[in-house]
Image (cartoon, rainbow, N blue to C red; front, side):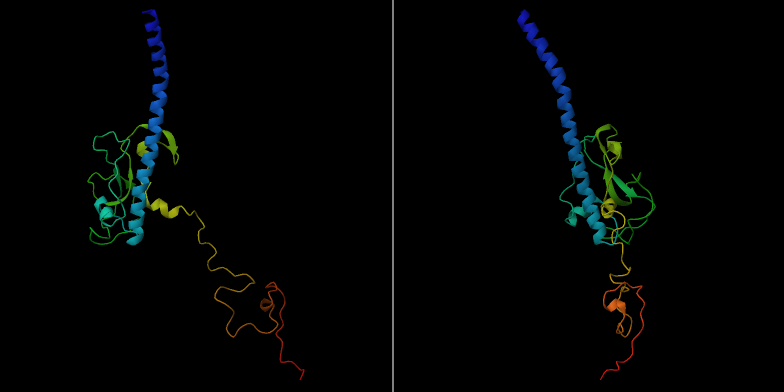
Length: 208
């Protein structure tokens, strides 16, 4: 009997150590799945916006119909039985473009957040779970702050993308090519010399 009690005590100690670690591991896996599924929505919305001139979808069914989203993903950390994500809407936008909605609209301008009426331009999703996360995602430590927005994918290239357009080309030539009539003989730009090199137009050669 004494040996059985000792064995049960050891098992209780082991379980008390293992269960929190196991629970912690499961939560981390669910966080990774939340990020994956949220980004699936963000990607589909981004593709829709690019396809329809920055218009946002009126509902998720449009994304599935357009073959931009495979299915409606469930929130793996949802506190509700339905497991649905919270839609994020672009407020102060009265019209939306693309199939399933009349009119046109832009995905820029207005405020971002849930809509009490459930109507508006959907620009992303967020978890309904208000709990504190293990992982820090984009500086946020609560699941309902992990926003997955389609517009953010357009800015991943970072600032300065495409910079330099319209500037001078190598050799000092302005964009658009040489001046009318072409470069004159003796022009330093013709030989690749620096653009500040003094230039004296040469006349017809005297040699015969």
